[in-house]
Length: 316
Image (cartoon, rainbow, N blue to C red):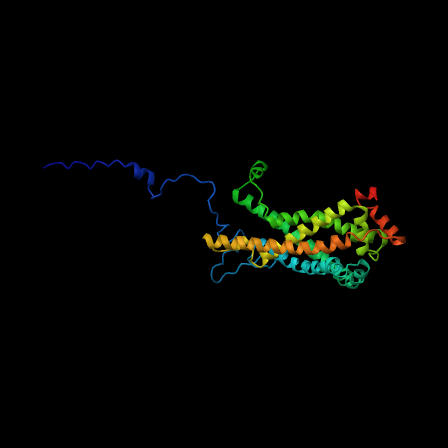
């Protein structure tokens, strides 16, 4: 009776060793996914995924499942609505009316007539101060939040790691907004805060005060005011184009047709900004800026005010 030859175990192939006993395939390590789940194609800050049926997600403050960026963007947007209303009143008083009347004494009563609507105890904080602070603050907070999200995604734990990760890039509209802050701050200081501090009110501040400042410091006044109006109007125009979904970057068509639409929108937005800037500067520089100094005791009061302007006051 023949003995049965024992079965010889087969040697595993190289492919079987790579796959392992549970069918896993060896792949190259990747520290970070190319497309993280936090940044899908439809936006930088997507809304959180919907919870399973029967479960609801609520935040600690009861704001639902939307992230901080959702609310910061809406604060930035709705605050710009209110400040645009103030800017519309301001361009009418300081440019359009002087351009129509060609007279500072004839334009001053209209400025004084509308001033209570945006300089009263109630309306100034609600129409000017609070929207301005909310708009700037939400923009800074949104930028810091984006930075935090980037560091979290890349796992930057040390200071050295954080230095190697760039900050989110500035958009053109954001860069204009940050450049506008010191110009707007200087304008507010000289026309509102200084008169309140030195005189207790702004009763003497009108178009004649602006003309007086232009006459004393022509180069600084013309250059600074042109920069204030130009940067401000371009920031408003591009911001409104974004809110209305008319910005060139918001064209959703690819190819040649998309390129033509983006180029067309670029020309339209810049054309509107140039038209508004030219209209504002036409009345402010050619009429108000060339009216000359104010004489008498009012002119001496203006001189005293302008002596307290930082840097420029020593030459008044």
